[in-house]
Amino acid sequence: MDKLSRILIVDDERHNIKVLSELLREDHKIMAAKSGQVALNAAHGPNPPDLILLDVMMPGLSGYEVCRQLKAHPRTMHIPVIFITALDATDDEAKGFELGAVDYIFKPFKPVIVKARVRTHIHLKRKTDLLDRMASIDGLTEISNRRSFDITLEKELRRIARSGAFLSLILSDIDFFKKYNDYHGHAQGDICLRRVAKALADCANRSGDFSARYGGEEFAVILPGTDLDGAITIAEKIRTTVAELNISHAASTVADHVTLSLGVATVSGSQDISPVDLIMAADDFLYQAKKSGRNAVFPTKKTTRNQKNNV
Image (cartoon, rainbow, N blue to C red; front, side):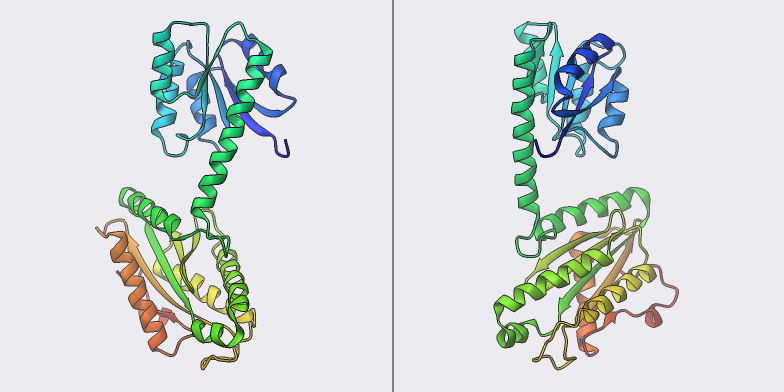
């Protein structure tokens, strides 16, 4: 394998962890937990496992309860779980599958069976991850697509409704992009879109920041925990970074290079606002940026002064 997959082995008996680790460590990175709670903490950590081998009978949280909690959380629900058990009753197997497990491994362990089942489900997980990534990435620019943007914006609005934090949205448009394609050709237009997309992603690079191709020559940036002043600062950074790429635009009436117009909208968690409302607000400000002469961010810091949000 070109990249070692992480396997979390969960068993309250040290001997079982040792046996499974020795079987699998040559081809995988092994994580271990001796209780259900430790397993849940590991699954929600910064380096979650690709597969979990989970003992059914454990003190405290049983394997069934751990699996139920894993499948109930969006961050861990897609991690495949293989139950480890000495139980062989059909009802026990049925219960595990109903909870979302993908397979069973029975004690005492048979090395060939363990390796084969782990290999199969790691392979399936990789395929699923690839398909999920393809479904959420824009094929041309290789940043997130509109579908992923819609999902992320709705999720972040729900999050700030609970936390009361700020959320900002930047909508941007390449100025006179149709003229760019007509003059420079669509092949150069594709190159331009890729370079602009990379500039956006490079500027909005904090943990949680999210960049997407919104459609055509439009791009969007979601900035969790960012008030209006901070979002305008990032929008200005994006605008100047794209200008500094110095991509020739002979058909533009704004500059001799590619430029962006950007609209910024910010909401706080205390406001009851839908994704459509926030998008419309940012789009209105984008229109104002174009109306002001393009190659601009609207609103500006001068017009907002000490405002924290503008929706």
